[in-house]
Image 1 (cartoon, rainbow, N blue to C red):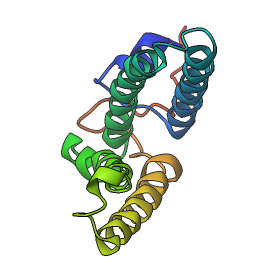
Image 2: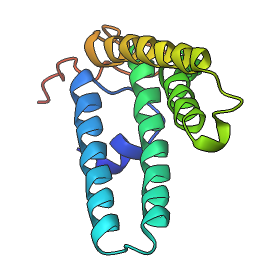
Image 3: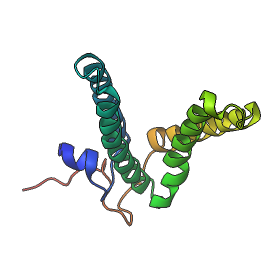
Image 4: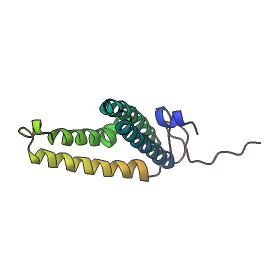
Length: 151
């Protein structure tokens, strides 16, 4: 398996198995960054974590795009399946900061929580559970189709 292509390539399609494998790898990398950043680089923990999180953010975007391609969906669907949960989570985190509590009411927080939950569930079902297009589609060959025997 070409790990660079799996984690950073945009072209082509990936199977559900590769999608979950990539998510597992990115989670492990995030945990390592959090642990190492907290233990070794105590003074610069935020910088280490932010740099690592940006890399994981970009890698996860490419994985989602390839999975969308496997489902024969356009890249623009990433705005719903990937971007909306991220924006909702960031909005919730910002809204809970003391500086924003005066202008951020609890109804806004609840709306963002519902959006986060619904879009995350729909994305997980669509990207992680549903079978990709059987056979080739406009994004490439079926990643789980049996390979023809070579003589």
